[in-house]
Length: 235
Image (cartoon, rainbow, N blue to C red; front, side, top):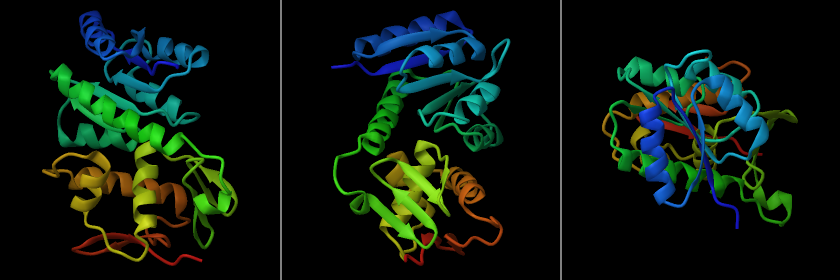
């Protein structure tokens, strides 16, 4: 059985060594890179299940690398950064990261977050050989295929990150029901809500930018002011 592979990308070699020890002890296969360009080379050569990506690096930083990766891949990305303001986190999430961890960090917490991302990623990508219709949630021109982890608008595929897909599927499976930001956060992030409202808002905005013809007047993901979000109008 293939071991899950994690790509660690950080120019601080001591951090890479530390994470190598913790993740190897959990049975993961590790790949190491020290800048964004080296990380992209690994992705051309190896099947990677999760990326831990530092923001500040030489040659190509984590922001540029994350955006490049998201052009072709849905693999979960956890960003690391000494920049810990809400705006830094929102920016990291908005360009495609699935989680954002500030430095200094607890290695055990990072391992736990990585496991959570891997569980969700494989659950949405495992696929089963059953009739496609049974896996499709259809909302007029929006088609969500839960087995293939694909979204289509008017027959055209839309690239969503694993977390964006998880939010859209959650709303679709509760069609017509308003879910609060806390409910969405608890279901998708599996951790206490605290100040997760901004995080949910950023992800919903990115989903709308990808599936709505006019994100300011959403047709699918609707805001119920003071309550939360809903996905309504299935065919």
